[in-house]
Structures are given as structure tokens and as C-alpha cells.
Image (cartoon, rainbow, N blue to C red):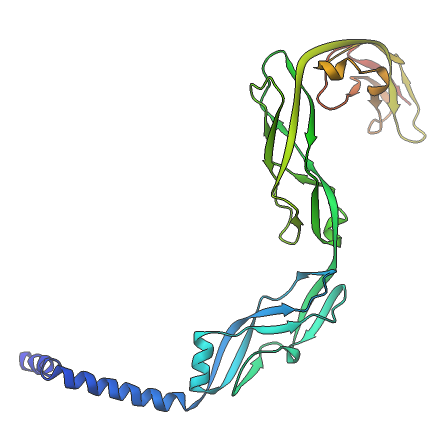
Length: 304
């Protein structure tokens, strides 16, 4: 056994340079023969969509397609090293589902035949539109004692561009929370917009806002009318037509101009069956105002 191992070692170590040249020659000879032979080679390649009209947008499509290539080894080796892209012409598409024959694809190949794994592909297309959307800003943190938010002014116009079927329902976009912790003076800040969809492009990644802060103040209202929100045909009796007292708090510049017509008070009976109830009025105030006190706190309601 030891003699056999020694023989193998001597074979690889004696006259090493000549053996390496022989191996290289053999490999080169094999490669010369191989690249001149005809073979089949299968792989997935990317699809490149071209000539889409500017007023359209692709909403769903196939990214890759499996193709079987037949040709000389040298040509297939080039495809293996640098895969081509299949060009799909979208010049004639219409909104909706488009069925496109793979026979119409263009692949830059020489001396190679391509057999597609699918005879047709589906490409979904929609009208591309643009519209102004409103940043939806949420506030976190608390101002310093004695101060209140007056307004949050949006300084940038945000335009969304994308498929009609998405943008028809899109009126607002989310924004990172605005932190007002311990603030006592007005300030400006850039807020990051939340992504909407991979198909929707926003005109900016951020929106500038101006936060107006004023000292806090209170205002007392008396005899505020009370509305009833009820179903058609529903009969309702309430013990009070007015709220005797309502105290509202907010920024001084806002509270000073607040009038009864800016306040909504209502009792909602739309989900109630016949019976007697004691309900708290729903208080509807302009943004950043809060109610501190209401009397009476509950209203007797009878639903017939």
C-alpha cells in the first residue's frame, strides 16, 4: 500500500512543469471541441419593457422568463456569462390586462435559437395620473404647561403620481409623528412622508411644517344647542335641548375667536333600540381645542 502511495506522489512531483503543460493542452483541446459543438442551455432572463406611453403605468407584469437556448458552445457561453434581456414592446397596450405573445419579444442573439417557456404573458396597465394629497400629521408629546397648539401649517405641496385605480382613493399620506414635547414657541420642521406604494411616486420624501404655539386660554359658553343624530323614522325624546355650560381650552389666538357656531354638540341614537338611556353629548371642536367641562354631563334620552 505504501509503495502505491509513493508511486502516486512521484507521478505528481516529478517533472511537474511538463505535466501542467500537458493538462493545460488537454483542457484547451477539450474547450476547442466543446465551444464548436451544439448544445441546449436553459435559464431565466429578465424582461425589459419598452415604449410604454407616458400616460400609462404598468401595475403588474412578469419580471423574468425561462428560456431554452440552442446553439454553439461559444455562443451559449456568452449567454451564461452575460445574460441578455428580452425586450417587450408596450407601444400598443391599453388600460387593463394585455396578453402579449412571447414571439414578439426581441433578444439580441446571434447564431442561437430561443424557445420560450410560455407562449404568452399578461401585463396589467392603468392610466397614470397625478393629484395633490394632504399630509396626515399626528402629534406626540406634550407642550410645556400653559401652552397650546394653535395650528400646524403645511408649507409644501405634495403631488402623488401613479395608477388611477390607486390615486382615486388616495387623498392623504401618512407622515412621521410630530414631536412637540416641552415646546413653548413656534417652530418649523421637516417630517418624513410614509411610502404609499411601490407604484406611487411622491413629489418629495419630506414635508415642511410650521407649528404655531400660543399660551393656553379658556372660554366659557352657555346655552349651546344640542343636535340629535337619528335614523329615518326613529322617534327620540331628550330632556335637554341645550347644554347649560361648556368650557373650552386651547391656544389663546384660537379660543379668542371661537363662537358657538364653531362648536358641535350632538346625541347619537342611530345604533339604539327602543328604551330609556342617559347619554353623554359628543363634543365636536376645531382642531387642537379640548373641552374641560360640560353640564349636564349626561342627557336623558327615550327612543320609541
